[in-house]
Image (tube, rainbow, N blue to C red; front, side, top):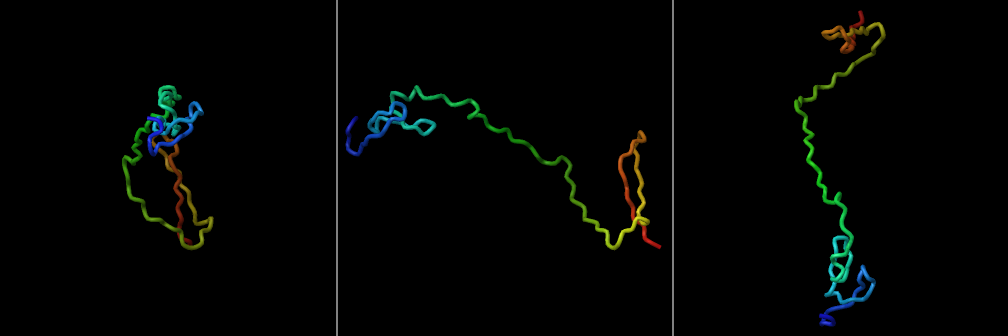
Length: 103
């Protein structure tokens, strides 16, 4: 009831009038409104209730990473040979560079 001990006046966010705090309620968007306005607040957008679907990001065929192979020394153009690998239909599938030791 109005004017009970410990009750205080607040502004209703819907009407702007002063009402007792015990006669108000908080809406979903944190507005304090008088109880007579509870059914009249703006409805929430349907996208606010959409939940994300968990995405499986695991690798189907994991393999350990191979050790790094570094070239030590000076590489000159006369020590490089290139070979093109081809697939079943004769299409190129990769390029293989080989380093030979200088004589």
